[in-house]
Image 1 (cartoon, rainbow, N blue to C red):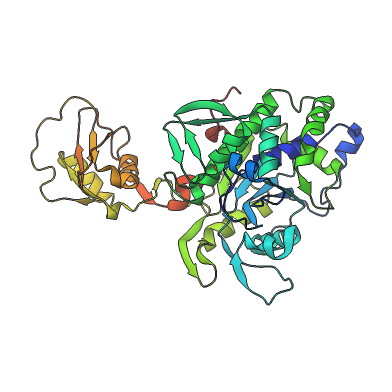
Image 2 (tube, helix red, strand yellow):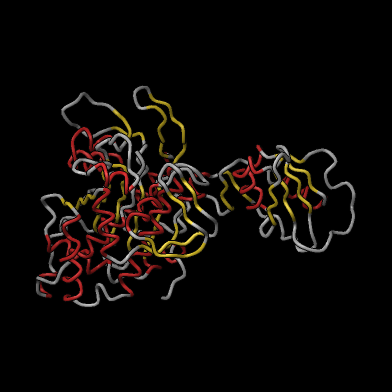
Amino acid sequence: MRSFTLSAVLVATLASGGSLWTADQLASPSLGAEHSTGTNVLLTGIDRRTGMSAEEIKRLHVGGKECDCTDVMMLVHIAEDGRRMTAVSIPRDSYVEFADHAHPRHSGKINGAFAHGGGDLAVRTVEKATGLKIDHYLETDFTGFVNAVDGFGGAKVCTDKPLVDLGSGLKLAAGTRVLDGRRALRYVRARHLTPPGDLGRVRRQQRLLIDMLSRLREQGAFANPAATAQTALALHRFVRTDEDTSLADLAHLGSLLGGLKADQTEFVTVPISDFDYRVPEWGSSLLWDTERSAALWEALREDRSIIDDAGIRPSKDVPVEIPPAWIHVRVTDPEVAGALRDNGFVIEDGSGQAEEPRPEGPTVITYDPYWERYAVTLTAAIPGAELRPVAGHGPVFDVAVGSEAASVVKVVHDRSSVEGAPVTGDRLRCAATE
């Protein structure tokens, strides 16, 4: 049950903001007028194969049993003044209490709310978990996403290293390229990359989303009512909405989002405290960090920016996925050895005793590729170091400090912030032109 991105939902929403209304109508939509702190939209991607042929399932590489659940969930908050968008990815395995429905009171993975009670229960469960009122609900599926991406002329993605995930069928070389809908689906469904799991996957969804929004804006998709209407005619059929969301509402949302630059958008994933919370009947799930997630929802309720909010990301140190205390290091330089020890790394006996001149060149970290994820933590502490994987090297990392060595920086074990920390869209997208 791997997921697909919500960019199709959002961009199709924007596209649906057609120009069949006058300027006065667009200025006075029925967008939850009782609220004075912005508008909240819940976007969902449904893991559903009903109606898909065996050939199409194979072509899109979406085999397996469907869960008929919200495999992707993103809450988009649009500021009251229309000058900021905050998109919060809610991991599908988040363990929460479901809203009331025809079932004894219980908790479960948040993606199961849709399976229990459709979009209505999904919305009410998100409202219960976050304390936020959802004003509009939109959903799409695998086919809708693929068709939407193709309708927009593809999705631009960039990566500094090859990406291969047999589960999603992704095979992507390093560099920047525009993917068709089928390949874009594989890109955003991949879960077996570094770091593995939901955090890296939803960050890729966020990256693709901001690039599509930015490209649409740059291409004039929202430049005037006629351009918006033309896009709507092609793509509005790929999105389903709740009965309270009218075309006029979508038009207004499109007019707001279409006017935002990348640096006026914010992206974050709900902070997690336990990445393997075991629950009977539900298996491994995710527990939200109580204090940090509460700070996130409070910021949205108060219509504030989440960037630099100390309650959401309490540390300014470089976040790492693997605790430094798990990593054993041999270091040739006593100064660097001491700095790494102060950072929490385990320094092997004999490190840094021979005070010889540093050799010319960069610092080199030699390691067994089996410990790749651990190497990322060590590299974060020594920016600019060159990684040298050697099969069979063993579990200890060797750091040969060169003359070009950068200072050791402070790192902190904060897995939620490795791929999920608050960030503006201009830092997520590929090379920007604005």
